[in-house]
Structures are given as structure tokens and as C-alpha cells.
Amino acid sequence: MSIVALKSAKGNKIANRQAISEVLLDLAKENKDILVLTSDSRGSASLVNFGKELPEQIVEVGIAEQNLVGIASGLAASGKKPFVASPACFLSMRSIEQIKVDVAYSNTNVKLIGISGGVSYGALGMSHHSLQDLAVTRAIPGLDVMMPADRHEAKKMIEALVEYDRPVYLRIGRNPVEDSYVSEDYDFQIGKAVTMKEGTDITIIATGETVRIALDSAEALQIEGIDCRVINMHTIKPLDKEAILKAAEETGRIITIEEHSIYGGLGSAVAEVVSQGHPVPVKIIGLPDEPAIAGKTAEVFEYYGLSVDNVKKVAIQMVNKG
Amino acid sequence: MNEIEILKRKATEIRMELLTMIYEAGTGHTGGSLSSTDILTVLYYHIMNVDPKNPKWEDRDRYVQSKGHSVEAYWAILADKGFFPKEELKTFSQFNTRLIGHPNNKVPGVEMNTGSLGHGLPIGVGMALAAKMDGKSYRVYTLMGDGEQAEGSVWEGAMAASHYKLDNLVAIIDRNRLQITGSTEDVMSLEPFADKWRAFGWEVVEVDGNDIEQLVEVMEGAPKAAGKPTLIVANTVKAKGISFAENVAKWHHHVPSKEEYQLAMEELSKQLEVLQ
Image 1 (cartoon, chains in turn yellow, red):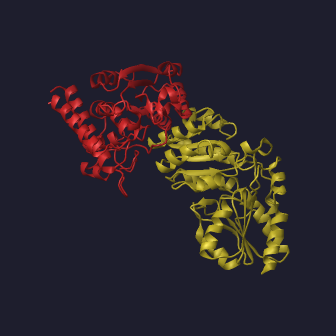
Image 2 (cartoon, helix red, strand yellow):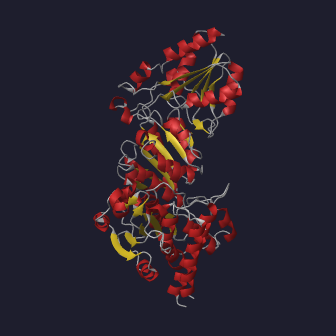
């Protein structure tokens, strides 16, 4: 059976943050060293229930993201397993120096969960968008960067991270996303991309919520007679270079799609590997270098071409060029 | 020789060691290392429970040097305590050394990498919170600079420490009144400094930070109050111990010339003789 959820499986109402909070609660009940830290963000992170059930394992820091990450690093240095949950826009910018020095450089076992990432806070403006976080975090040595495709992967990722003794930045969105997987019954490994669909004509590499778009695009392209590979790059760093180079070699053209600036994110990472390892055309689909337009995630995605129609158009153009 | 005299002698030896390190490396933060030498000496030779043979001993007291640039006294003391061979001090700031110009946790005995100001207190809050959660009795010490007090994250940490009633946390300010540009009060005034910390819920005590006897007395009594973090305002003299460098702003990171080095070492040697 395929691990990939078909269109007919759509209709999920569980947000990734909810899935994460539930698995964290389960794991934390078994291990008192697992802590969650919030910056007046337990509601946004769906951690209210965690706080009620395990009041001794939640640390409220107030609206102070630098302090949030500094305290987390001190806890980690003392043997705790802190999971920090704070809006991605603030966590990845306001506290980036604490992430760089106290977490990555000092190598403290802190897991940073950027919630409401990308354009989740669509109408709240650029202050609340996090479209540079992948660029910033992936440039920091010692810090891994991840984005789950859906609730199933979010859960598997957290389970893996509890056992993973390295600093990580993980970004999720605010609202429920359509499932990309049928269940949690698949092999998830940090740093190893998942080939969601095989294909020989072109490869779409996606991360986070855009994996669903990539899958739907591949289905639409199949009708056009284009055999499209879909790779879910859930770990942006360390990057699965092997999967990228294999795709370049076997399909000859690559499209990347991500809820991030076209600068410095997944597309850049893929282009760095392809241009130096096996040069083939790469088209990067993401958000342009401008304050993003206001709107719901779907509206913003549509406007900037993070859509099945646009991916399909770009793919057909690339394939027709030869 | 009583213990106070032993500590005074140790502090003078550390000053000679760190000055030699800076002179030979041609780089370093002379003024702040010298102002904080007595504080570190009392912490490491009298107050803190640490084990150089087992640097990760789980019940050890923790020290986080928030004013990371004043690393030379710290390196000299860690070497003298036996955390790493003294010989290695010669590599200070040299190619591929681990004894870089800021605390670095690749070196045994160093808890956290610091160097960017305003980070140490939040880290210390995390460590002190962990001790409370685990029912451990170790204490957490962090040394901050006074110029550093302009960093907003210091006050975020100050709020949290008092909110969580961290009476196992002791912060010390090396109040030497000078930062790189000049007087702290001209650059960004701090006074009424102790009152600010009291208003944040801390127990505050002031001390002559270059008086070993006073430091011993105050630090032995810290934490000062149940349910409250303690702040020690250690009033110090920048570049303490070298008469011609004391209270001169440029000695923040001035490297002594050959002549200055010799003069300084003579002065320190005389101080040591008095303590014989």
C-alpha cells in the first residue's frame, strides 16, 4: 500500500501543532526531563492542555523570546530536554542570537518549534510572517532544520527528536493541513528525504505544507502525460544531497516549492547541491522578496503561484524545453 | 599564612599569568580581566564546589561568565585548578587553539559558550530552574559586566529569576564603571543601579570587588534571602593591580608594550613579596 494519501483522503481537521502537543504530552508523561517552554504562546502552540496535565513540566517565560531560548539552553545544559514553542516569526528573529550562541554554538539539546510559521498569520503583516527563518537557521552550524509535511509526519518527527541529541529548529504552520501520508506507518529518518512518488520526467521537491501541493501537481501532470517524481524534504538540514542528485540525474529537471522566501530556503539549498553536483535546470517557487500580500494562506499561496496550476504550468514548460 | 592571605596571593599570581598571556598573544581584554580577578579567585578557590577531575559532576556548582570577553583570568584559573594543563595557556588566541578570546565549552570546566553580552543570566536562570526541578542543592553563579547592563535580555532574565524565586542563583556585577567608550554613566547611565535590581525583586548587596576579605564574607553568605535571587554589586577598579593602567578606559583591550609589561610585572611581583 502506498504511504501517500490520495486526494480522496483529504479533509483533515487536526493542525500540526495539535498533533505535536499530543505526542509531547504522551512522551513527557513518561519522561519528566521533557519540558515545554512558551513565551505567552501556550494557546497558539496548543499546549494549554499540556500545562494543565503537567504543570511542573511547562515553563512560562512571558513575552521575552531571548530569555526563552537562553533559559532553554540553561535547562538543556543541566540535563533537561526542553522543547521551545513560540511563533516562528519571533523565535527565528528576536532570539536568533541566543539560538546561534546558546543553542547551536554551545551545543545544548534544545528543540525549537516555530509555530504559526510562513504566512499562517496571513493578514497580520510582515512582522508576523516568517519567510526568512529557513535561510537564517540553516546558515547556523550545529543547528538542524526541519519541516513536517502533515500531522503524521509532525508526530513522527517529535518522536524522533526526543531521542535526538542535537539542536533543531522545526517549523510548522497554524492551521490544519491536508494529509500527505495515509498514516504514521512509514520509515521516517532525520536527514533522509521521502520519495512520495516515483517519476522520470521531472522532480518536485517540497517541504512542509507544500508537499500536498506537490502531490496534487504530480497527479495533475500525470493526466498530461508527465511522469513526475515528488520528494518530501522534511529535513532541510542536514540535506539529503543523495536524493537530490539522484533526482537531477534521473529526471533532468527540478522544481522546488516552499512557504519561504525564494532566497535562502529549500530552493537555494537544492540549487547549491544541483549546480555543484549535477547541473540541471532548477525552478524555485516560493515567496518573492517583498512583504507578502495579506490574506489567508490559500489565497497568498495562490497569488504567488504556490498552487497546482502554477506548478503544472512551470513543469510543462520545463519538460517541453527538453 | 591564613586563607585570606593565600587567596590574595593566588589573585596576584593569576594577574601575572593573565598579563603574560595577553602580552605574549598580543591580544586580550586586560582591564576587565584584572578587575574581575579577585571575584573569580574567591569563587573558584573558596566558594564553588567543582571537581577538575570530573568537570561534568552532576552536583557541581555552575558558573557562567556572561562578560565573556574577560576570559583571561578565567583561563588562568581553570588551568591552575587543573581542568587542563597549564602549559596550554601558551596557546591562548593562537591558531587552532581552544583557548580562544571567549569562554568555550570545548574546554573542561566551561559550561557554556559566551561572548555575546546579555546571555549569561537567562542561561543561569535555566540552570537554577533545573536544580529546583531536580531537588538539587547546587548553586549557579554568573558574572556580568556593568556595560553589559544595557542589554535588554539581562532584565528579561532578572524578571524571570525573581518570578521563579531562584534563591540558588547568584549574579555578580563587575562594576568597574568603565566600558570601551568610557564611563558607563556617560555611555548609558546605570544609576541608581542597585535600586533597579531591588525593584526587579532581587536581594542586592554591595561589596568592594577587589577586597578579598569582603568578597569572601559576602559570597559565603550568598544567596542572601530565601525565595529571592541575589545580586552582588562588586565595585571594582578596571585594570586593578597595575597602577598606571587602573581606571584608564583604553586598557579595556589595550595590550601592554614590552616596557609596560615589565613595569606591570615588577609591580605585581612586589605585591606578591608583601604577601610572602
